[in-house]
Length: 104
Image 1 (tube, one colour):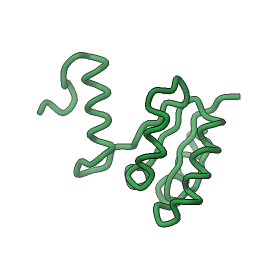
Image 2 (cartoon, one colour; image 1 turned 90 degrees about the horizontal axis):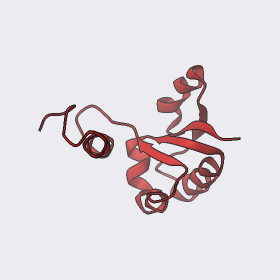
Image 3 (cartoon, helix red, strand yellow; image 1 turned 45 degrees about the vertical axis):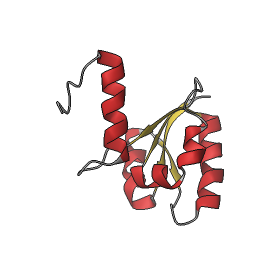
């Protein structure tokens, strides 16, 4: 059964459990274990959110899913910009045809 999941550092993702997300804990400090967790989460999820810090640490592993139908892996935007914000901006521009959120 497909689910909506989130993967990242424990203190950043645990609160999503209250919203019904399946939470996968992974640390950018242990990339080998994090890659294994990412594969497990990707097998079970239709949509998988990932913290920006972890997405940067697992860039090559996350990129393998870029052209797959599932899961849709979405980096979470962080305050101050970064990978998640850039990914969100590209997604909005692709969907709408213009930058209506960030207006850069």
